Length: 60
Image (cartoon, rainbow, N blue to C red; front, top):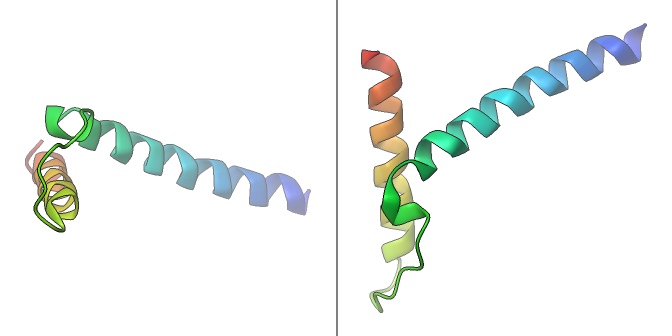
């Protein structure tokens, strides 16, 4: 019984994380190869994508 509860909690967290990753991937720049040679540009794109996804969730 305890393991079932723990698995249910873990699966709920996993679903939330998977939905967040899918939302970030909806922005095209995260699904393509970045060919820019600037350092940390991929981190910047990820932060922007995550910020836009969070904004979408709060305004929806």
